[in-house]
Length: 212
Image 1 (cartoon, rainbow, N blue to C red):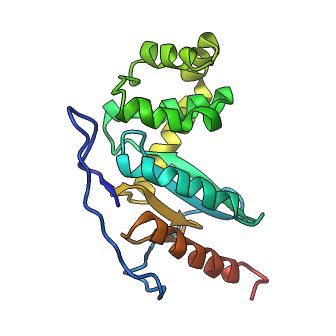
Image 2 (cartoon, helix red, strand yellow; image 1 turned 135 degrees about the vertical axis):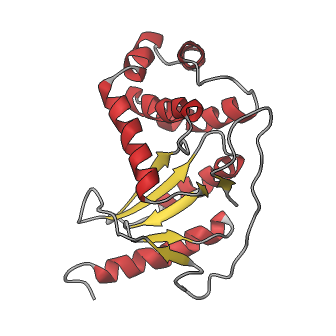
């Protein structure tokens, strides 16, 4: 399932189509698409998996617990990171800022699922700085600490980097999975995406220098 680039938060959240493809074979152009050019990862010693997502995306919300459980089982040479998207729309940038603000305050693990609920069930306009700060305070975050992080250079830099990654990886919809800056998992159910990601992790591991 994927929330398409052309879809965004409005009067109603538009669900994109669901696709299911077999994962028995790891086929370029079907199970995955090579990322051209390949993108550098932050740590050459690790195999990096990126999930591009949005709090406004219902499929991302459904995928979130699956990703969390899967990530917890990965070996030490695999790092899984989430990258919030905006699809180049200014009205979606605050959702990116919310993610990195919660990360900065140390409340992300505790409130990540709640942010999806606030966006999709409660329809809270967390794109507003004050509304986001009020919501955070109601959920046990120091309001001043939240606002300081929201306005910080560090959070702004991460938001800009997320937008850059979204463009470099040519993300057309979410949730999307990329492995090692080389492979974008194809269109299929998220559980199948994770199965393909497992294969691409193994492939990436075999491609590391000194690995067989």
